[in-house]
Image 1 (cartoon, rainbow, N blue to C red):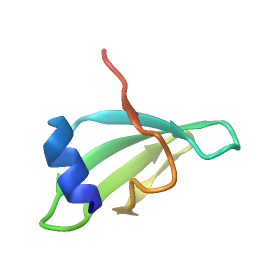
Image 2: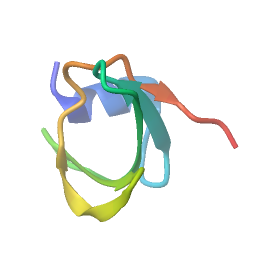
Image 3: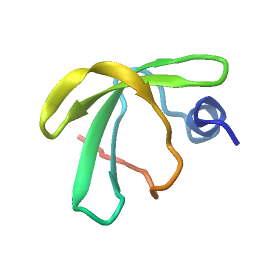
Length: 65
């Protein structure tokens, strides 16, 4: 499943904040765009620029306001 498909399946779109841990502590990202296959997102911890992200390798969970 691609990252974009995972977003669509979970109802995640631009503005959604996700948290995931790859074993080095949790990391939060904000989705900025969902394409046909890939997504764009910005790291929030520490703040970063918009880049392509993969949702593989972590159990991403939506952060609710």
